[in-house]
Image (cartoon, rainbow, N blue to C red; front, side):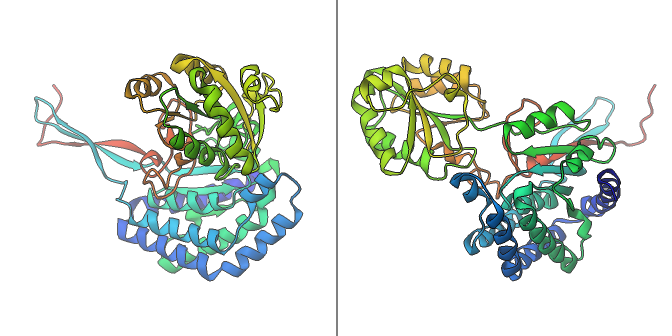
Amino acid sequence: MDAHEHLKQAAHAAREASHILGRSLRPARDAALRAMADALRTSMREILDANAKDTGAFQGTKAFLDRLTLNEARVEAMAVGLEDVAALPDPLDRVLAEWTRPNGLRFQRIATPIGVIGMIYESRPNVGADASGLCLKSGNAVILRGGSDSVHSAAAINVALQRGLAAAGLPPACVQNAPTADRSYVAAMLAGAGLLDLIIPRGGKSLVERVQQEARVPVLAHAEGLCHTFVHAAADPDMARKIVANAKMRRTGICGATETLLVDRPIAASILPLLIADLRVLGCDFRADAASRAIVPELAVATEADFNTEWLDAVLSVAVVDGVEGALSHIARHGSEHTDAIVTQDEGAARQFLRGVDSAVALWNASTQFCDGGEFGFGAEIGIATGRIHARGPVGLEQLTTYRTLVFGTGQVRP
């Protein structure tokens, strides 16, 4: 069966499943999420064996290998994530707005599922579990297509999730996995108008650009995470050192990792050597502008391209800027409107930065690595949306719903 024919059959099954799922009550969906979590735990050995096949064949950077690797703690975290989603409020049938017209007609705008979602992701196998849980809770069926690097892991995780769904009495077709990582399946999904209601790409810049250029289905895009941390002149030095080290080095391969450090000129000479020393101990390398190298001469020279690079590795671009406006100008020129942070004790400067930075998420005195659905209280996330339509920032349950309008009358007819 070719990719398009398989997608057609999978989408029809998903559509039927979504009708059942969308009409289900919260207890049924929550019970299914808990059953899926149990199935992940009981399938631990099969999932880790499948992941070992993927990691054994992987040829790439250490940071990307970390994104791909599963262990017992990470599988347990996937299971806990599903249970966390089950504990969240029901996103469906919420009354978003309510009003009454002079003729007595009463209107309600209520939250409703989107329908059938196509998810295209790379490397991180846990994305499949997170996406499945969020889609299920929000009443959506999902068809997942993971990357070639994680093909065995994704399949094993999906088998476990479907086992949990069946045990809970919901259709396994609520959560389906592409049978191949071949690019032809991506092409079929992108051409899937009428089969899929929304496509969510989660991966590198080239994947997202291809989806945006070729899709005939609406796209909720997740752009690259070219995140900045700006250490302002009024920053508390100890706080700045702690935040910068975490923002860059906690996990270098995630989209919320800081890729560029900006330091305010008045304090650059005093604080930059400390920040560099802290990061060096953690194994970080650097690409720096002339002003930074005048302070720490051994830093490697940064090119213009370096400031446009999402490293996803233990490499950090460094620049000295002039105040908040200098930081905002640099971010506007090089950033991806994902996540940017300021470290300062000056509330006026912080407010100026938060108002001026045009990013999906902006932080004051906190690590950029907090840009994560779990940290936002969403239980998990299906991605970080950086577009300007429908959703921005971590995409959780609320962002996976649309709305419809109910009208209540008492016999009115239109004159």
